[in-house]
Picture (spheres, rainbow, N blue to C red):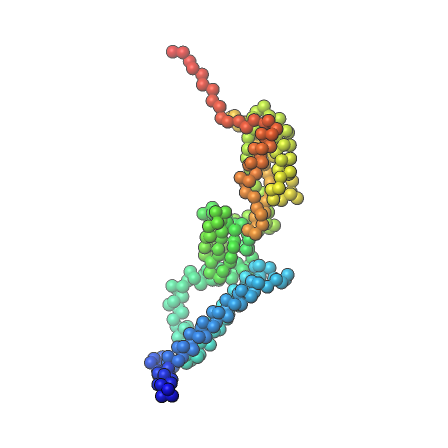
Length: 282
């Protein structure tokens, strides 16, 4: 048995590769893998620990900054430790990396740009977790996560969109909740020409105020007559709702059943297009 262990130890220490004087053995490779795996494990553990902290002075954005910086610092640090355990001279490696980085930099230009853009977003906070944004393709969604390379957006259809961070730096992005997380919604509806305008306004506002719909009740509702249509009086309901992803936020169509019930209960007709046809004799 002792002889067998001796052969295994001899095999593990056998140099099968020589890089600039650094003798690479199977044992060194195993050490590098162990340190590398431990670094990723420690980095992910650090991220989960930061996310679970309940500190009043740390907002979600600050937690994201701390967790990302800490994660990459731990991973990069363990990579250098692993290379040292492998037997590679880090000073020589720095010279080689400097020569290679010039050529590789062109191929990794977009990745580096997205990485730097992610750092800018985390510190500048023009885009924050929970913000409702509109992308250049007119797609709307809430910011769920800001990573170092990309940002995850979730739409109203529960579809997750992964957007490169460079998009938020180089293109025009509409942040619908940058200031206070509240946005205005306009819900159009119509009533017959015989309807009393003030009565339409009263019954619609009263119905919505009496409901349990979770809109911003500290901002008054408004019903406005916007146009005299071909077949109806055209109104719009003005309301304000929360845009944060973790807050109850009604959409435009949540108001429509209440508007319909209010008009129906008040016997206010909801018109439909009508066309008069005059027949002339030959």
